[in-house]
Image (tube, rainbow, N blue to C red; front, side):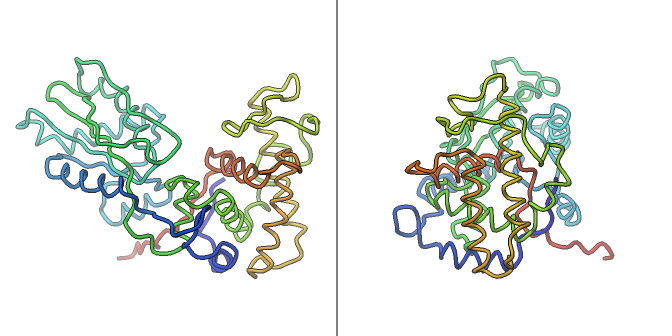
Length: 346
């Protein structure tokens, strides 16, 4: 399910009231959005730009494609796990480098983007597929891929072609030095471009709930998904010992696969948010009402995720699991930005 425009003004008001200004983190003090390693990475990228023949900027653009096309900027939708999709990128690279290939023995293609946007995953796919375009004689190395921002700590070169020699530079993810407002910072945190510990999982989950509620997203889930919203496939035991890393419990009901278990968890979460919003008699455009609804939904999510009520860190566990479902796409694809309107008449 593709979700529409960005959150309303009510979300911004609720964020300010419920979550506070950006001068916070889990242990107090101001948030450093631009740590030292990003400053160093920015300087290194700037130096490499002088010798790079082509720069690929990786963005989680989705609905932005039409906007970039209207601005006469090259924009190619890519699924890093699709062979045909990556081949289209290599075709574009070949076209862009056509003149340079004839006169230069060595070419550099630099890949840049914010943290955790998928640069290393894309480069690994290029490695696997590039041999059909550019013969490679040497063994291909893989770029390190991880779920946390900051995995790529230095600029590394990976050879994808031999004649001519073509290297792809995988760069550390960097942000702009200054985040303009609280909601922009929370969007980056929700997308995983900022470490959760910097902002706090609870605050990020609260922001996600504010976005879902003001858009009315849970009300659409009942009609748009093909899982059963009226019930689930099994009745689980009351208590489980959970492994937060992969959402799977150490002990799960017998004869239930991991896939079905996660699907049923998603159904329970969607049902909990659907009923809490549909039965809510307040106004989500009012920041006080929205704040109360979010608190009710945290309790509903704790039951849906089967987290023991006496758990000392129950709210953190709820937030982590809820964010994992969102980031792995189990709740559907979302766009958090306002896409500028394109004037097609000019």
